[in-house]
Image (tube, rainbow, N blue to C red; front, side):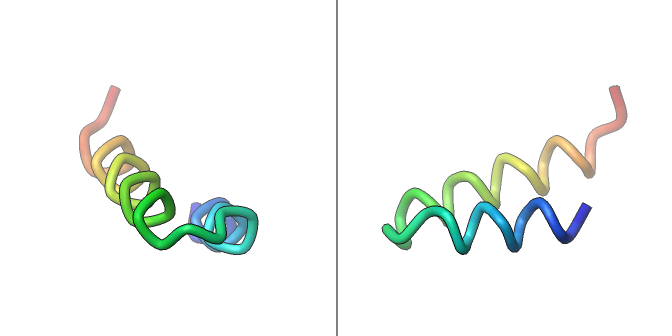
Length: 33
């Protein structure tokens, strides 16, 4: 699921937004459904 994170980073220019999205993504991947 690293590709998604990279894509989000490339799509989102603002670092703040990218960081928040990355954090959420990592948490979602870390915590199983």
